[in-house]
Length: 260
Image 1: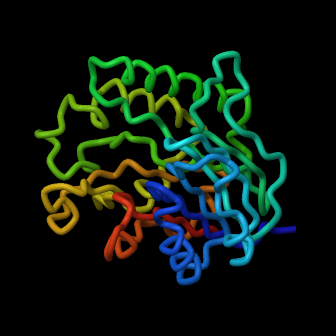
Image 2: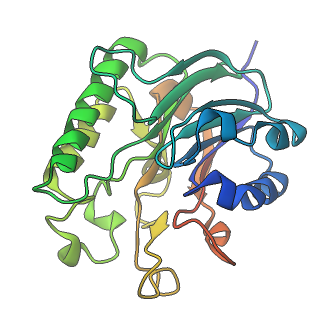
């Protein structure tokens, strides 16, 4: 039996309570089968489960007070839900969740920002990437149907940065972060937006300050990474820049992909 068509999106909402109506409106307009959320910023008991169930979605979520938080919404049942990496180093930061739906293993990640290159938070970010890589080593087969999406807080190349010279050596654009993301991908995951749109910046984040969005001073730091088997089914992928407009937006826009 052939796999059903699939429409997947990922979105750092920068607070689900503040952006709940925006997410509901976007779901109604875009009609994705699966939506992965990052930076929900609520404890598990405060996640607005019922409003999304009423919109027709099953939900798996993993949160903590005030910071981080990830969730997967799907029109189909979510099976084999997994939170965190299950390794000996697991901590209290809610940054990873996975589930199987519509025949695809969906993994949602919110990678640490890193703050500054010389800070402990940058070292934590690189360690977190190493843990993610080890997790994928044991959980993802190149021949399988799986995707890893979310806010990676890394612009993979200069094309993904509005001003590469100004950002060179800064967090989100360092050689160390780019190499860490490359190790995550290895031979098992493809950067789908870049694969389908090799010459377009396709920014997904713009600073709230200094007219970053109106001037399109953005970075592409939100990604949908897919196994070659799933990538072979890809029809298109992109960024919904319109969703960044209006009152009180997230500083990120949804990134989406369609599969036949």
